[in-house]
Amino acid sequence: MQENFMETIFASSNQFVSAIKVVRISGTRAKDIPKIFKFKKTKAKTFQIRSIKHNGKVIDKAPVVWIPGPNSYTGEDMFELYIHGSTALEKLIYNLLLKEKRFKIADKGEFTKRALLNGKLDLVQAEAINDLVNSETQKQLELANSHIEGGLTNCVFNWRQQLIKLSANLEALIDFSDEEIPKNLEVVFLKNVNNLILELKQKIEFSSFSTTLKNGFNVLIIGKPNVGKSSLMNAIIDQEVSIVTDIPGTTRDVIEKKIDLNGYPVYFSDTAGVRNTSSKIEKEGIKKTKKKMLESDIILNLSDDGSFHMPLINKKNLNVINVHSKEDLNNTIFKNENISISVKKRKGIDELLKMIFKMLKKAEPKESILLTNKRQINMTKEVLKALKRLKRLSVKNETELVAEELRLAISYVSSITSVVDVEDILDNIFSNFCIGK
Image 1 (spheres, rainbow, N blue to C red):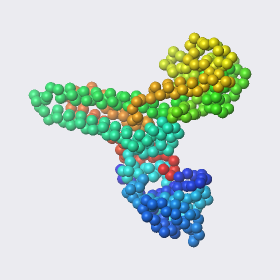
Image 2: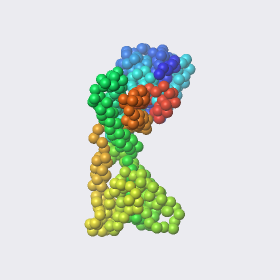
Image 3: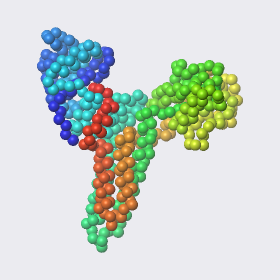
Image 4: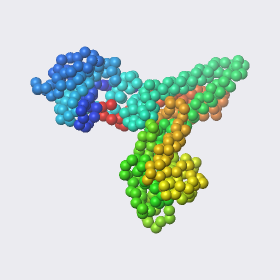
């Protein structure tokens, strides 16, 4: 895909007051930055202090670096100004650049988009850069870095090579006459198709974990009114986010807060107590609780009297931890409890968090190369569909149809990492980036 990069783009690393802002400039006119701001040229890829001037006056004294293409992030000539983080200074620099010909403020993700179109990285790596910027936990960071380092790219390349080899084998079947076809050639062909199908299925199956890792795991706190749900929520979050009173039914909505649990982003939700009630508002809260139960990864089922009966338990294979709450008031060991806690004495909270962590860790695939977004998953599913259609065909009698399915599969698998010649697809991907990246 070709794009005309006549305009030189620029943007700062953030749009707020800060100690330092990095103004990044990329394009054919990046080399003119010393002339525009009246400072001495610098050596390539060397940080040097320069006085940035306007109308003969110094507006900032800052490190600058000149990065000539193609050995830059975008593949183009680049200049970076490490100015002080004043919004007034940033605005002045923006206005001065906009007065120059062929300069424009970069759109969201436009630097990375240019890097992609200039062959500096592929589509998976571009998406991973955005994931890296937005990562909040170590696990999210590790997943993003594995893609930037080419883990998924190499996996996709391997799929493509397998499909190309299948195409070559198909050509061999076509070239032989009926009498000359080796008996095991078709068997081996279908065996290789089946092996690839299993590999694709596994990747799609594991993708549910990676997408949850990106978005956050959901742990729901449920139980009858006044069993200590809000107190537990506050103890986990370590701040007052839920109302704690002796009055039953004070939580009327789902209250949600996120923590970093040993690298896993985990949303804890405090819910309305499930009971029979005449209050319309409380009934709505209970309705939300029941809906949330089916969407949760783990449920903390609280009880202070040993009654751990839970609505909807038979409708899904839920991961449930029965929590004996208020253990300081009743230290009886209940029949179905998994753990006992006392928020008041801060007893059992850390053990409960360890239990939750072990559950999440158990669900994590051993391999680190995972599909991480809908686009990657959908393209992989299309490859899988093509191969399944192929299996319903006769390799010997419907060879051309088999070849077409292989061609489609190769096209879909290539689109996972390669630029698709559809502008709105790229616009959709990069619209989720921050400005300056």
